[in-house]
Image 1 (cartoon, one colour):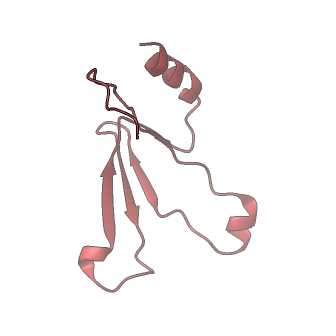
Image 2 (cartoon, helix red, strand yellow):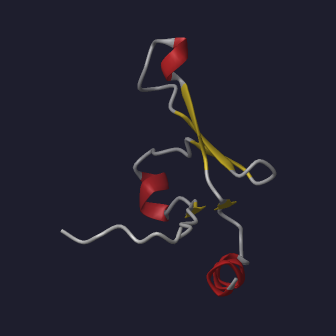
Image 3 (cartoon, rainbow, N blue to C red):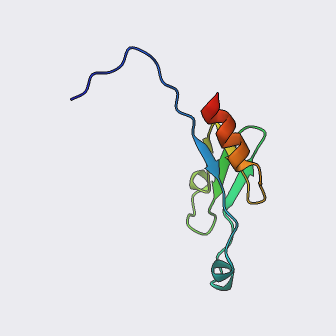
Length: 83
C-alpha cells in the first residue's frame, strides 16, 4: 500500500450535461436533468420512474456544471487545471 501524502490535493468535479440525441428523441426519451449554473447543481427529475414525491427529484452539487448549450467547457477546465 502507498502512504498518504501529508500535502492536501484538491479534486474538482465538473459535469457537462449533453444534449439529447436524435435517436433518443425518436425512441421517445425526454430530458430529465435540470442544470443550475448559478449554484453549480444538477437535479434529476424522473417523474416517470417513481410514485413517491421524495424520489421524484434528486439534486447534486459540483464544482462546475455546464448545460447542453455550453461552449466554454474546455476553457474552464484548462483554467481549473492550471490554477
